[in-house]
Length: 402
Image (tube, rainbow, N blue to C red; front, top):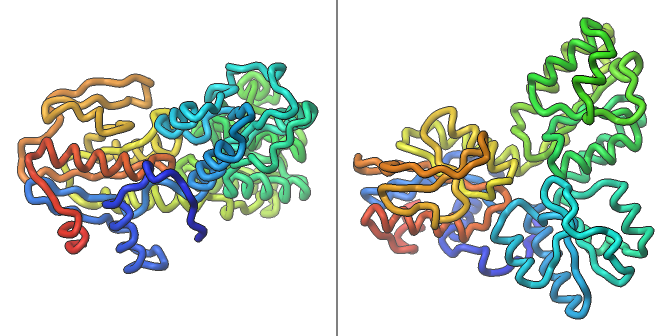
């Protein structure tokens, strides 16, 4: 796989050495067991796969290269390049201006753009409407488009099944940048609807089966379906694609469920399109690694990443099912052995937890991070855990024990 030139401040000597050694021993990535960092009083189980994925590194490389190549131009980002506060703040420090927040709210109006400005499309992609608006202003984004190739793969698959008269069902968060972009691309070629979870899939099933009247559909899914959506025509043949950062197991469960529903309703196996190939490799690997890590006994789990990161929140969700889990965006949230600040993504608030660090010895901690989290932050968390547990390690010693 291609290697990318990203700022050295995001790298970690420790994590790089660990990943390199694991890759050499497992070139086919079949072993999802965690890496044990045995530090005596502290034992850290580090997930097999975590941190920057292909799409994130590609986006970061393009963004910083754009800054270097255009010292005399105004540079704008449509929204956050990825969902990591450190990376976004670093780009702002380099003079990059953000046009929208993560939910599409305008910060800088498009009317302020000039034809010689540079506009970067983030890793999540953007809507066709926004692309058209930029092109009409004479701003060509091809060179500065950081859309993740795996997001584009979802768009291409949607287009392919749309040509076969399938309606596109998108499993995603309706307000997320990627889902908004995917919806825009999908609805250009076919009827499309966004559902956020299995509960909404079950509600949609009632309209597929005819158990609920069409009139109720338009009220229930208001804002989530494409213009001209007709339940009498557009729920006869469907295919399910996803926001790539959703839980892969959830997407597959939704697809399996809707497949059974529509085949039962139509009596035609061809009424459901197979779209398994759209699931993102990094999402699968990171979530699979967490599931494997959770097979080991531990006192708690720590997940590192941006608080608005969808893929990171799903890793937290997996861990929460098994043990106490702390979602932090950097090591500074670990105030001491007595107190930690952590984010509750369900209520969208940062909370303080006292007496969070166990008195038992050794303390066993599961550790992972989201796909938009720099490895340097993970190393920072490890160093902080080492400090508060009154232990130490030498890099060479750790690497030799793996």
